[in-house]
Length: 280
Image (cartoon, rainbow, N blue to C red):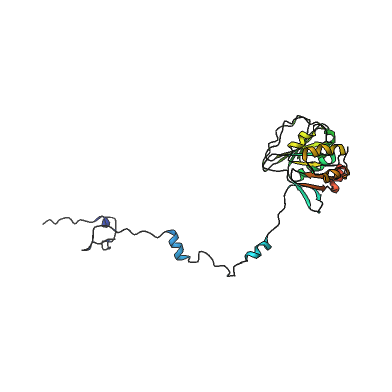
């Protein structure tokens, strides 16, 4: 008698236990849909196993101040730039030359004041370019300014190349080109200030004074004060003091503000430039 060959399910063929209970067993109320069990997300697991979201730190009272006490924790912040001296109230006078907008400055004064401004600009990290008709007066300063690094460069008049200023590498161009400076090839740009030095107020000075955003005036003659009054509208009390200023004092002014500043050189500056002087 032949018997039918027993059949085996695929689980038994793979060596699985025939008595194993299947994952889903049909029931009288079964709808035929296989239930889907979604695994817990990582965030849910973290909330379960780490209810404190990390280690618990020390428990202290919160730092709370009243509205009236807020002013007591304020921090005074001054300007940044070149310290050109002390004002009449013995406060540092700071000249911000590194600006994101073009900035033109005119200094009616001598070589000593121009070189002090150039030396202190280099000390703030700016690259200083000097356009001058007397390079012998600037070479020694350019060699000593950077302490072995090239931070000040001297160019002949009309030979200044593009400097490529940027926020991380601002430029200060000193134009020491006499009483009648020619129109410069390099002009003021964002992060590039141009300082034009005039030895005195001549017939061409009103044009330079009118276009400058900041003007520094050392001692001038009474005849020169008439030109300054007509161009800048400086009050009479300031005009009367300009012919009597010391060699290291200058009036720094804009259209609205005026301030007298006394420049005291350091020992290093005195060793390089000598004592303060108005005329060269």
